[in-house]
Amino acid sequence: GEAEATGINASLTVLGRVVEALSKNQAHKPYRDSTLTMLLRDSLEGQAAMSVVVCVSAESQHADETVSSLRYGSRLATVHNAPTVVALKDAAQEAAKNAHAFAAVRAELADMEQRGFAGHFAAGGVPSERKSLLDNFAKLEAAQREVQRLKCRLLETKGRKEDSSHLQEALAAKTFEMHNFEGIVMRQKSIRGLWIEEKPSFAAKKAELRELEAMHEL
Image (cartoon, rainbow, N blue to C red; front, side, top):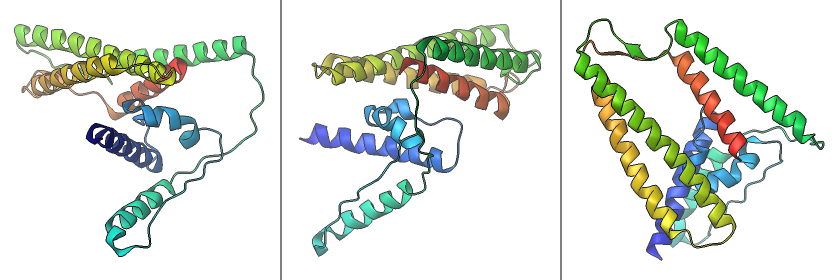
């Protein structure tokens, strides 16, 4: 139906953004924005050998769809991974390794924050504006955590082939709320003399931590 087609198009749009991020070697890839990209993550960036089959038609009336499919295939062809033989790993060792990676990245973030790389308030500023921004930061962070939690639950529910309509509705509502807070925070940070944006290196390190957290949840 129409809803199914809309869902498929949305998933393919997210896949396109992931492919673009991979081809440009960006630190953050939006795998978690779609169930499709969550499922394809190991194939796109993992250690598997991946092949892509592009279906096209020789009929002239399908020329637009054929060209679009070929262009999509050419974008996917820019993604390169390194297939390797994976040996069985000890779960305890992997857990210790992941814990060490978490601790290392968090320590780096803490050090960068102390050195002024993180976003921070400018000198001076109106106290009420500072408090309002801090409150909205907290609301945005809470909404972001809830969106990620709902995405994981939705993925698990679909994997069990259970009814997920209630989760989809909750996710849509919470995503709308998150985007609303993002807009509010962005506007508040643009107030002259209130906020100094984080350095790109700090943003990249935060993205690295988010990727570690996503891998841990998977």
